[in-house]
Image (tube, rainbow, N blue to C red; front, top):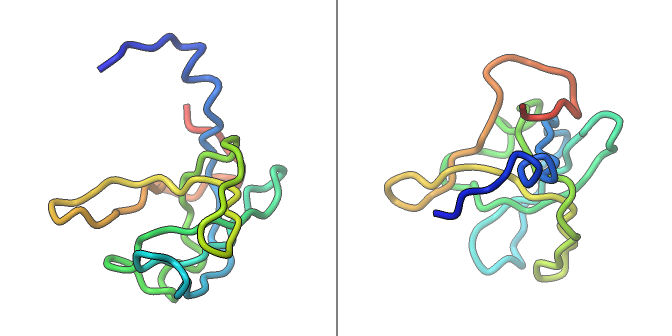
Length: 111
């Protein structure tokens, strides 16, 4: 693994946001949801996430997640993703979301 400098890490805008809306994404190649997330002063942004194995749409509403909000927008099928939802793969390769243990202000940075 390549070692990076602190200045490299500082370039990545890892922010916390609250999930406001969750929609099915049937056009995606792999099962996914469309998530609308409130990042406070950084605005509300949409992304897709392949998290259908571990999360229902209902349980995601109000959950705080961590996203990278300064990557370029990316087209996925007929949808424009505005940020990267972060998570970890479990033993089966299904995604478990990165999240905060306690509620913090939307838009807070990962330190």
